[in-house]
Structure formats: structure tokens, C-alpha cells
Image 1 (tube, helix red, strand yellow):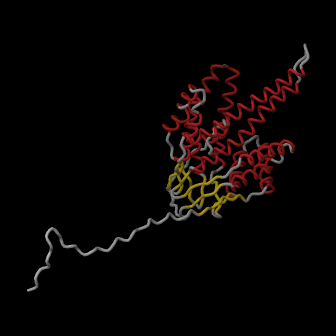
Image 2 (spheres, rainbow, N blue to C red):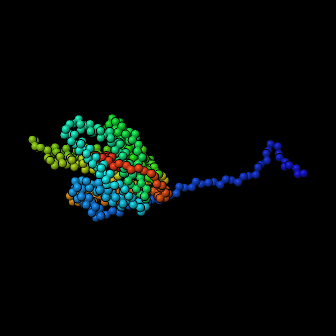
Image 3 (cartoon, rainbow, N blue to C red):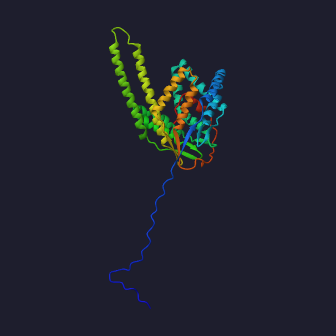
Length: 370
């Protein structure tokens, strides 16, 4: 029989060494693949659609405007492509016409109420204000329901409670703080619109906070204040130097101050629109995919200014050209950073949505866009 191994006092036998574990390196996330939006429309093609729409709308006293809207939307949707696939606008003219008639009747009633009774007009204005959040939700639901890509429709999930909080009740602290809460309110409203949209069973996400919205708005306010202060000081100095006792101030100075004010507002608004557009898109996600927007304030200002001059100089005939070049610029500056296949979306059931709210918020120019 073999003797056991001798172990010295105070020592324990050393067990055999175990193999060292292999270090596992976490796999890096796959790189996102950029897919740029593209717009293929041309001014000549759209001009033919636009001029026919205008003529028939005038001849029919506006009744054809619903068909004109559908033709226009289908042209712009159909010429906007992502990953080589065009978008589709699926709404029909008759529901839009019915909604437009209701919207126009409401607007005419509001105007006529001002001729009959100031209190009646105030009551109607309050009623429209109370209906605004509901109109926003229904309008967004209509536009989403009849927009599609790759044969799948978008959807907007209604939440009337949150709509009233973000579009009505937040107006109270906004007024009490003299507008200082405006960036916070805009952040909450943009988040509401983005996060309630769906596509192919996937919810859109919004990662921006109010802290992201304050810098562009504060910069815009500061620049506008400085612009007005310097412009007013210069024009006031000129008015004092040119003023003659007993004479009226030169008309050129009055128009000069208006040009300074509105010109500065126009320029600052273009830069702010680019900043907010980039902010919203760059913080929007859907599933593993993200958006990237690269709008430039200087380019937007050039487009807005040159489009305005061209439209006025042509008595409106260059409106199609102006809309096409702006749509092309916006599309080419927007990209989807895909974290997977863009075709991996499933169908989602949706129901028809009435067009009335969409037409009312368009008539009263309620801002629901990104």
C-alpha cells in the first residue's frame, strides 16, 4: 500500500492550478448605416400640377381645393424617397372637402360674430381655444393615418389628457413667467408629438429635454434684443440729426425702423428654425434607428429670402419653384442612421380618421409640425 504524501506542519497541500478564464471582450455595437432622404421633384412638373389646381379651385369657388391638396401631397410624398422607396399619401378628397367646409364655416362664423357682438366673438374664440388640443390630436392622427412607406401606414396614438396639459394648461405658467417657460413648453409639446407616433408597430422616441431647447431660444432672444436696441439707437440718432422744428419725421426713417425690426426677425427666425429642426430630429429614434438633421441657418435664410423675392417679382408664378427647391434642400439634409434593416417593420392595424380637425388646424395655422 502506497504511503500518503508527507505534509509539513502548518502547511496544506496545494491544489492543482485551474486554467485561467478567457477574458471576454464585449462585442461592439454594429455601425449604423446612413440612408439619406432624397427628393426627385422638379419645378416644371409641379408647376403643371399647381397651375391646374389653382385654375380649377378658382373656377369651382374653392370646391376643387380638396382635390388640389391631395394631388399636391401625393406629388411631394411620391417624390420623397428613403432607401430608394417613395412615401405615399393615401387620403381621399371628399373627406378633406367635408372637413374644409366645416373649418371655413367656423372661421366665417367667428368673423361675422365680431360684426354682431364683441362678446359673441370672445365666446367663440374661447371655444376654439378649448378645442385646440383636441384639434391638434385629431389633425396629427389624420395626417399619420394617411401617410405610408413600404406599404405600412404611420399612426398617431391619441392622448387627449396630455394634449390639454401641454397645449393649454401649460399656457398659464407660461404667461405668469412672462414667457421664460417657453422653451420648456416647446420641449414638452415636441416630445408629445414625436412619442405618440408609431410606424410598423414601433414607437418613436424623443431624447431631448428642456435643457436642450433653452440655448437656441435664449440666443435668439438675446440677438433680437441687441438688434432692436442698436437699430433703434441708430435710427433715433438719424431722426434727431434730420429733424426740423415743426416738421413731421421723415417717412424713410419710419420704414427704416420697420425694415430693421422685421429684417432682423426674419433672419433670426431662419437660424432658430434650423436649430430647432436639427434638435428635434437629432434626438428622435424609432427602434434601433436614429435621425440626423444637418440644416444650416444661413442656407435656410438664403432660401427664404430668395424665394420671397422671386415669388413677389413673378406675381406668384414662381411659387412651385420655391417650394420644390426648399423641399429638396430639407430632404437632402435629413438622414436615417439605421441600426438594422429598414424593412424589418411589421404591419399595424389602424382605423380611419376624420379630416375635419386637420382642416381646422390648417385654417387657423396651428403649429403641429416638427
